[in-house]
Length: 109
Length: 504
Image 1 (cartoon, helix red, strand yellow):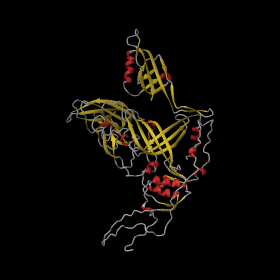
Image 2: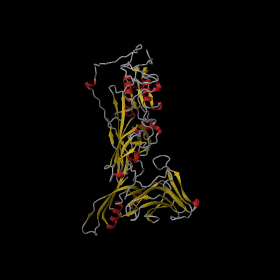
Image 3: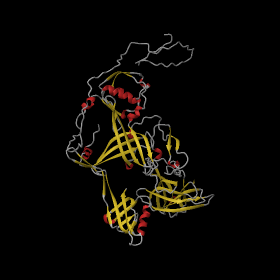
Image 4: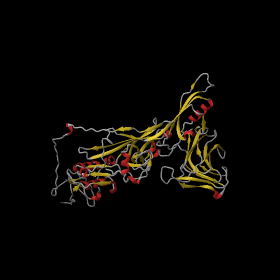
């Protein structure tokens, strides 16, 4: 189950949560590899092929709060405070009225 | 040279590690009493932008800041975007070193922007009971009291505890503010920190005239008994309203602790986390540490990297960052004129070792013995006097004559190395290898850096028998009982002067 700011989201058609590592690798003169890890943070991407008007309105109302919110993914035990970015909406003719492709990117604070 | 403990050494050279930076500033201490101009965010849209104000929190005019560990520092690491520091050797003999550092801090919360006059509430953080009142109809079961809470930027700051241990409701027991003028019909935002038990109800009561009052709506928050939470609500003021007061009421049988109340005009989505904008000033003690852990939140520790004073603070509104430049005390002593203290009774020091002269200079600069650590000098200076130069200028000269070095170290202590210091401290602290540690290595030989012909010009002096050192240009008549003062400018320094006697 996906919950954004207390609102249940429909299950996405695609979901990913890659980890960004702050830091870099250094190679020594004779080939040793050293790594600095300053931080790790996750980005959660949810994509829907056909998002209903109601669900879209729910997401946009949260997005328009202009603040960080809580994101929960019960399946993967995720509970994070995130910033929200939203995609452009792509409407496919012939599908249910006004439903369309949509995605959101949630970045850990 | 710092001795770094074995744990930090092992973490530093490990195959994988987590380096970081910790920056802290003592915001609430200033030292120089003067006027300055401040950019006030509350006047950005109208009226004057620059406000002439007096320098806040003066301690002593022209005081040299020392004893750095005696200050209370605020850790700003959470807002730190970048830190870049340099230490440069100065002088023909590299006899001195100066350090400086540039910090860039995130200011999206406007933490570092002055906000005077933006908050309409008097005494918003409850350091006293001024401006606040209580309606209490249930005796000892209700009321309020000031309590010490670790919120606020200054240790020892207070918050207010509101209790409603009986059955009183919002209409019979509540904390309320004095009345403050507002613009009718406009939105205003109330925000505050709170913790406690039960539900806390907040309302802004609009007052038109006399006793006519109408609530702009109530908001109720479920409190956490652990950490403080920040709550915020925006409400429109009544079209007839001329003043407003804030009410805080806690649910029956519960308590609430409230701090840092902010009531300001506008529909605000954020809030100012702490009110330190007015404290963002030059000459504030600053420290930077390098942190080295084996992994985030893992084992390791910190190593001091810089101690100094803030110099310039540039608040970039478009980028929501503030750039802070800080310098070490060497730069501070460059602005401190060297004046022979009257207490020494000497205008010239004769046959003094380098470290003894440096100690005199350190005292001229206002340092105390805990602020410096000097090697015993190898050089004895026959004659030393100060004349129109800074403390740092003369310290550098003494170090140059010694062939040594003067500098403030990473902990803010003034160090003097004599000419043999490096030879006598050449034991290895750590062995770096090209396999495990060294990423690149190069060196250069340059004919311009080789000197085979050196000319030394000296101005030798020696103590003479009594000489005439100054003569009045023309006789002056002094009447009986009259005092006259003469100022003498000498061509040469003196070790001692004979007191003039009339008619001799």
